[in-house]
Length: 203
Image 1: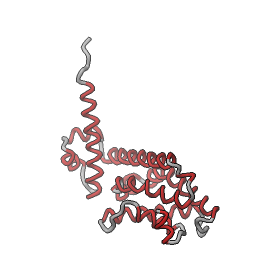
Image 2: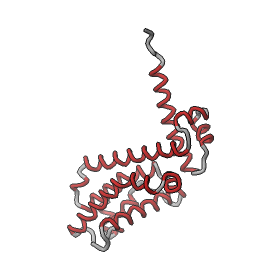
Image 3: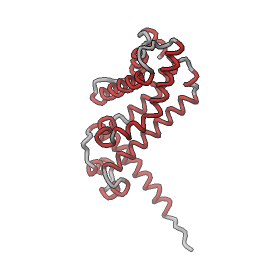
Image 4: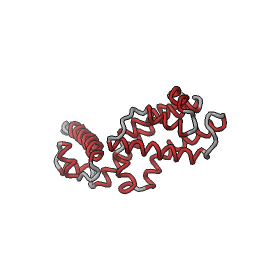
C-alpha cells in the first residue's frame, strides 16, 4: 500500500492558510468592518476558493474569530488564576485582571464593531460570561472587605466597568487613545470607588 506522503504537508499548508486568513481578518476588519471576503482573500494572499474552503461565508469567518477571542479570554483568565489573582487583595485582583484582559480586548477589538450586528447579543454574552462572573466576584469581595464602596451592586458595577472598557477599546479603534492597559486598569479601579492616587499606586 502506498503511503499518503503528501497528506501531512497539505494539512500543514491548510492550517497555515487558515491562520493567515484569520490574522488578516483581525487586521483588515479592524480598519474597515465592511471589508468583503474577496478583499480579505487578496490581502491574505490566497485565492477566493481557498478562503471559502475554510469559511463558507462571512458568518463562519466571524464565528471563527469569536471562538479565537473566547479561547484567548479563557487563557488570560487561566493565567490570572495561576498567578494567584483570585487570592490577591481585591484592588490588586481587579487591576491584575484588567491588565491581563486588555491585550485580548486590544487584539480582538474589531469584533466590537461587528459583534452586535453580526454575532448577536447572545453570542457576545456567552463569550464574556466567565469574565463578567470573575469581576463581579472580585467586586463583591472588595465591597465586603471595605476596599470598594458598596455604591452599586457588584453585578451592576461589573457591567458598568465592562461597558467602560468597551468604550475605551472603541476609542483605541478610532485612534483617540493609546493604552497598554495601564490607563484602563486605573480607570476601572477609580470607577469601582478607589481614590485616583491609590488606583495609580496599585496598578
